[in-house]
Image (cartoon, rainbow, N blue to C red):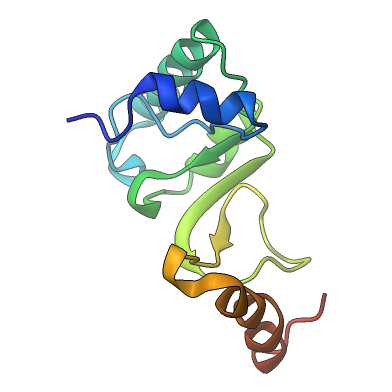
Length: 127
């Protein structure tokens, strides 16, 4: 079942949000061949462009990837890819396989501030 209808997504784009590529069928990329991964990326990209989106990033379904995935993300023109691994981006991070900082509505402003500053400081990251 669709997780989002196209109309609200288009409204989000009009407000300045980027809709990133997330594959055509939401399969585990790490379990796919090079050709299958390429097809997942290109089919979704083509569909999004056809519907007015200009995806500039790629989000790995389930965070799944293998040795080929980062290069395929680059080959499709995406400078940024996101995994589901928790963490901070550093100068050593492969920008095609970035970790994330989980933020939810219940975090509020204080929780977001904590995650981006205090937690980063505790873990030894510097802005």
